Length: 341
Image 1 (spheres, rainbow, N blue to C red):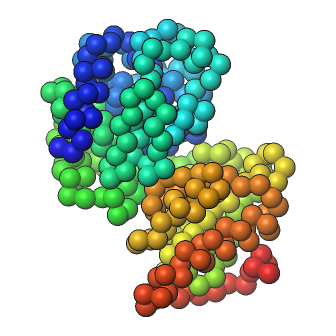
Image 2 (spheres, helix red, strand yellow):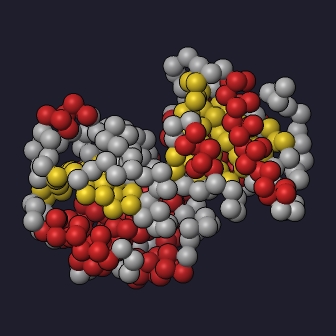
């Protein structure tokens, strides 16, 4: 097991305390939700009190996870706060004023992003981990706690989604070994996949249709967008945008992709970036104050749709140049573009 020293130190801190609040980033995804709930089950199995706190609601396709009904938007006094895959308290799905009012004596940071920052009293950052769910699994194994069915399903959902269904380069033999053990512990991979990927509301499918109709391709780069008006037209929510970027990177010959979502604030966009192979889009995201994984990152940008598109496309084109220099085949069909000028 990797990170034995960090895990041992963290377990000692946990054993010395009795109550915890767990949170992750805004608009929690599968890894944030599954890891937080999985950690809640682990702490309770260790005889601790644990509360999961998210400001944003849990998306419909993760409502099947055991413990989701216990997620709160606020919390009381606790011994420690644990933040999962956040680079700061401000990035968390937790009210900062409330946090400051009941400031826990200990703040713990568990992250696997390359852009992770040591903002807490105790920081465990492992960029090689395929998901934070993998880190929580290692914590459970080191603690000697049997993995319950509830914990197994939460952690399996976390790992499944953050590895892109075991497609991202971070996936390794150890990832499959964890998945195997979680299935042996009660996680049902068929049901989890059906709930996560095949229970989409009509609004999400309609929004995907709009995003796909807006696709632009230029050589090895693809991008698309949705506006606030387009989202309102089909009754789509922010969570309905989840996964659109994966369709863009799935185009033959495309090595870097960006999905732009217009925000309600004027001239503000949220970007989801994807890449293949060794192309590191987290470097691009960090240039605009974001971050994430090598092949899946995000950031926010200010400007008109045309301005933001030009800036991000220029960055992706530049990132693709080394691939061309190495002789990689990165040609793709080019569609007419009104935003390249």
